[in-house]
Image 1: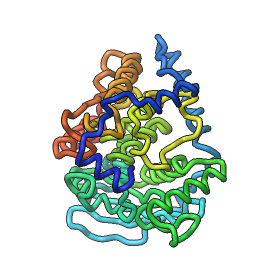
Image 2: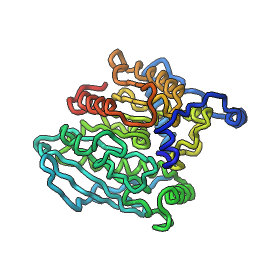
Image 3: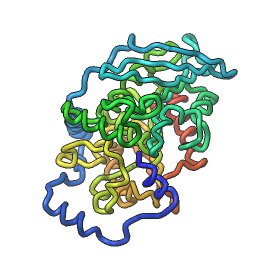
Image 4: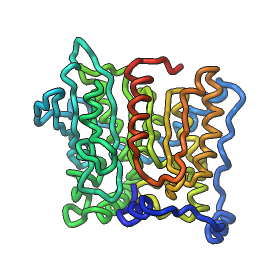
Length: 369
């Protein structure tokens, strides 16, 4: 979710701020931002607060057009890959773009023997040409996630986010603006339309979720969502906005915005990511908490300067209180693991934990009540 230069810096160096950021303190001193989320004493009170936070999030994302219907999707190719079928699909997103994606369907998944499924959200990394191809590569993950998850028995769907993959160069300025320039023009256009690029990205993700739930070989009660970096952030926002995903695994980008500002690392995240007015109402613990009590696993390196560790811990402390409201078993549904000496990377150990988490909470249908 960063430009190439920043992404490489995060991967190769430790950039946690050692000194107070005087400029940030001066800006913050003259700006009214929301205090940390106050978790109420009762579950009933939290449920009311949760509904209010979700409504405010949808409002802040902007005036998003209605999501297109399932009938907008069409499979344009199928390839036999021995143990799974690789489908390429597309849909008109109702906002001026054709969106393409990949579906990995294990041969064991049928309408009679429905399979669990995963909505996979690709990262940014300044790799605008890749998008959904990440599912077939190891540019962001230690294994090619699509075939690996299909081999584990999951139907997997991933689409190109705005400005990525086959959508690179298809923004409002057309092919003359690709990469970061295309991302900037898309953000500008959406602001003029009284909406955010982030909202439009999530809108496409939720449209993909609509489709995944409709597939005849998918058990719509057993769907997980996952990704690294921008894909991680997409995942925890999807959990916040929609109750259908049963579980999530989020690698990197557990970012609390006040701590990011104080660390002087606003530059670590692209323009698409910012939602006007958000800090007037709440910081990101309020977003992540909306996923409770569904199982969520976060894995973050303590040298990832785009997610200052003090903010990661702050989020974890507050969100744990929300999970605790749901009863004795619910705290085990939330794990916030910090990896010492690790930057913005996806380790093999993280991948193993991702699959185990999905197997436990999605495939095996352990209740998350």
